[in-house]
Image 1: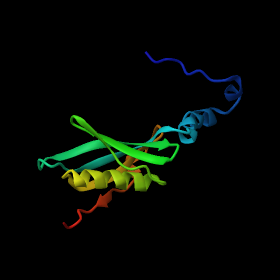
Image 2: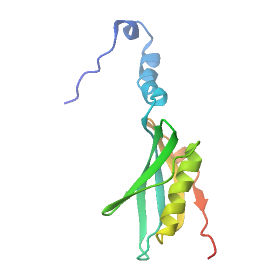
Image 3: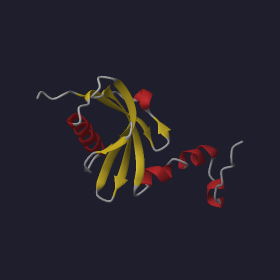
Image 4: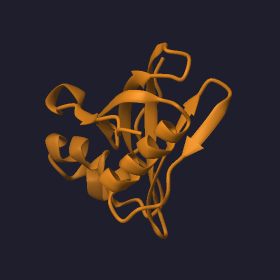
Length: 127
């Protein structure tokens, strides 16, 4: 059983297709909080392949990315762009022994985008 959606009297006067698109607007204009989810794949320090979700949040200082892997959470540096925040997280994971990583945008707000997005390879750096 689903809960009915509550709409304002102003929203009720809008055409249905406009009302449907309004449901995603609050996430894109949200000042702080999770705005995107990216998929991260790679090889962990134990030589096992893995796949996890990266949560990208808007903060007062910019964007922050974090991932949970087994018993710990890793968070990258706050950056001015989403791409830089994700790269910061990948770099931090690389320092912990993760390798052969790639990322892809899965969700922007509630909108599923993964099949339209291309993978971004994060090549291992030579030591």
